[in-house]
Structure formats: structure tokens, C-alpha cells
Amino acid sequence: MPDDWQIRSAMDQPERLEIAYLDRRRHLVGASRFEAEDNRFETVPLRRIAKEALAANAVSVLLVHDHPGEGSCPDENDYQFTRRLAHILKPLGIRIEDHLIISSNVSFSFRLAGLL
Image (cartoon, rainbow, N blue to C red; front, side, top):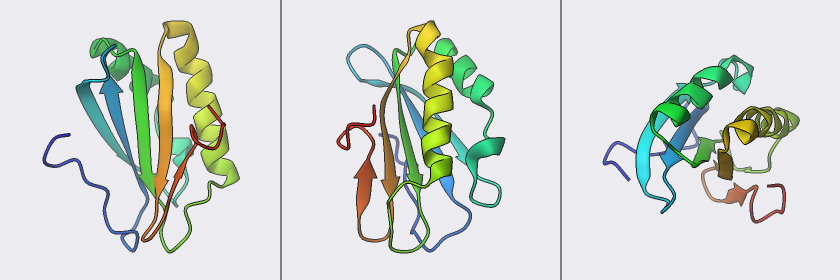
């Protein structure tokens, strides 16, 4: 991962989404960073994520974002965002490798929870 690839302390605001674009060998071929408005990702441009994944010739993406406070359980916004992005990327041959949610003391993996 690049040196600047860091999830901030869970106490920082607002939530930030970081995306790693991966090639067939799961090597990093690009990265993006978005800040959520009002801690909701509806404003994150899904088409831009798809465009950047295609430009990087990525076959998968890894999503990582922070949750303020102590909890890392996904909320409805996290589920909807992940489903909408997967729906856009699938016809392009790009899959979501995982969506990780990081808080101050725990993390949550959509993949390990069987949600991807």
C-alpha cells in the first residue's frame, strides 16, 4: 500500500472511503479517496469509481472506510452503497473484493460476514 494509504483515527470527521483498484494478482494499480457528506456515501460518485477502475484496468476493488466511535457494524447506508456499486461494476467484469469498516477498536468485513 502507498505510504499515504491510511485510515484516520475513528474520532476524525467526516467518514472517509478509500478504494484500492486491484489487478488479477491483487496488486494495487490505483487508489481513490472520498469523504462522505454527513457520514453518508450517497454523494460518492459511483460512475467515477467505475471509470477509475476501468482506467486502471482493475478486475476488483477493495473498499475501506472508517466509522466514528467504537462500532464497526455496517448501517443501512453501507449495505445500500455496497449493493449499488456491485450492481454497477458487475457488468464491467469488476468485483468487490471486500468492504472493510474500521473503527477505533474493531473492524467488519463484508466478505467474512458472507455479504459479498
